[in-house]
Image (cartoon, rainbow, N blue to C red; front, side):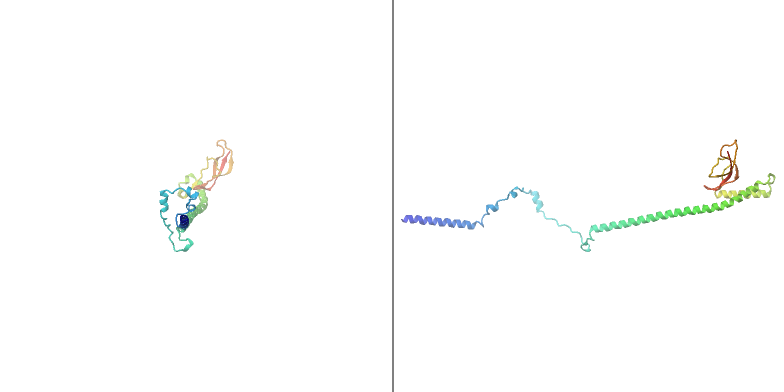
Length: 234
């Protein structure tokens, strides 16, 4: 009987010891190793490749601080930014180019005005000179008519010789001014130079040939001062 009691007591002690051991294990589980469900890696984490040493070194590098634009003291409107300054510079360049273009245009207009006024002055001078010279032509015509009536034996006389010298002097002055006589007799008729007032039939000369000059014509430089009055054959 005593042996049975001892066995029963020993079994009871062993069960009590086992229960205490289980309780201690349960109490130590939160502070001990992590639970397999918590420590187990997810499928996504298992698939991620391990980072290389270079990538780790790049990630470990400290980020460089970004340089902030210098404040220009004009507030947050951005007027003092470099881009704003560049825009102002471009506007100044545009204004300079516009002013230069305006100056060039004004200079060109002034040059054209100067050339136009010079041309107008030259034309006005030529018109005035032609008007004066044209009024002198009848005087030359009268000198020629008067000298043509002097007989051959009297042309050596003092009066006739003096009139002839005055006539030659006037022709020289007219030539210096640019007045030259138009060639007519024996030349082909030119309506720009000749004024046909008579027509004659002459088989010895060609067609539209001037056979006689009734009044001498004159040129002033490149323009006709007076047309020649002529007789045209055939």
